[in-house]
Image 1 (spheres, rainbow, N blue to C red):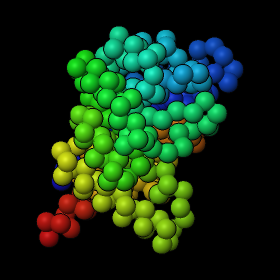
Image 2 (cartoon, rainbow, N blue to C red):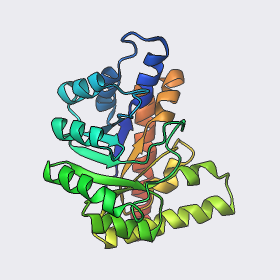
Image 3 (spheres, rainbow, N blue to C red):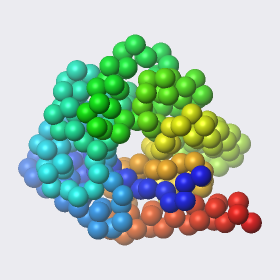
Image 4 (cartoon, rainbow, N blue to C red):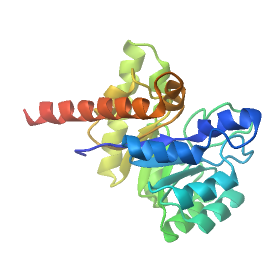
Length: 252
């Protein structure tokens, strides 16, 4: 059971807005610094193969000009491995990547890709990065992450978020909770993310084994209406209250 849950803010879509017109504004590094001031525990950035949002220059500036730990999301390719080994970010999350997808569509098949992935995990761990794999909440995938030697896993919450309230969402929440329990039993630090917003974050934050949530698109979108500082602070409050209530109910 983890007493305090971390919030890591993905700033990819600040770069998406910038790239829509070109030029330097809005700057994702400025967003990362504001996230730090608002109470975020870390920054997430996905350097995609096609560079559709975060650029190589962004990555360099994020590492040089931001005080929070950086979690670099990347595909398991030789190009991305070389970049990660050069910059040595605090954390690296291996994710699936399809050139035609709008956003990540599901978890990485760690179980089916052990032979391909083991070199990436071992070299990144040796370089000092905390390595996680973004997977669906399936025991076979968790077992594969453990076998690969990665210290952490990120559970894909997109399916849960896409279901309306009702039986299917409840069933997916149960699956996520069971996966978090299994991850902890394997000795993996458990993270979660994808698609989370104000109306979906509470039940995920209440899962006591989850140590970190990675949230981006919703916060950047909400910032249009309320400002990034306000959006992050509200998300932080919802997460903290959910965890406190869960811990209180268990101690009672």
